[in-house]
Amino acid sequence: MGAKVQDFTCPACVQDFKLKSSQRAFRNVVTNGAYAALLERLGEPSSPHLCLLHYEVSGLSVRNFLVIPSFYLTKAMAVARRPLAPTARRAGWVGGNIRIGGVPEDARVYYLRDGQPTGKEEVLRSWGEAKGWLADTMHCIQLLGKEEFVLEDLYAFEDILRKKHPRNKNIRPKLRQQLQFLRDGGFVEFLGPGRYRVKGF
Image 1 (cartoon, rainbow, N blue to C red):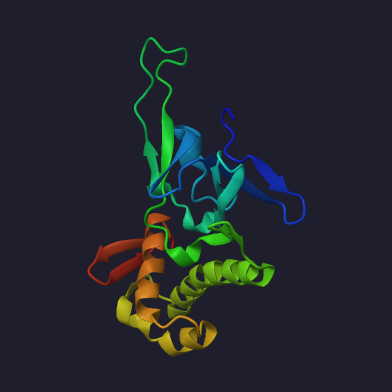
Image 2: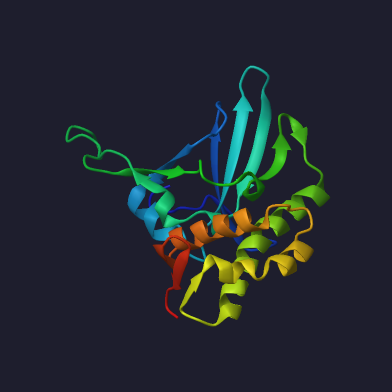
């Protein structure tokens, strides 16, 4: 892969994707390539979506295939591995990992789960739901029109968000979750309990 971070591009939607596969189910950490390239790309608008393929050699089958949309992958998730030893062919090279343990379940779009395919309508709904919450939270912050805000300011949009996302019964925890991603992505700054500042206001 060299310095490249994506593995392929979809010609239909012109979106980049990174594919990682393993015989073990993915849990908290995904091994990646060069740390420098990973850190440079994560959190950027052009960052690829992360595809995770879990397979079984014995049955020659795929058990799980899911995608984590790129807008949920932030620079804070990049972790550097130890540099290669001086005796290694690429001495000093530093690889990176992606910590996905904190990515919520509803931000993981399953195409295949426990050997069972997910219907097209459900996949499309999952994509829309995952992207919608992040975009809606950013829009609410923009509507506030001020550099610093508190959680109570965002809670004022609770009824509006409940109508947009009727399947979600925990609006406030969801807003706090999205703020964590916006903080990790560098869009907002955490000032203290329940207090935030919009960067680049």
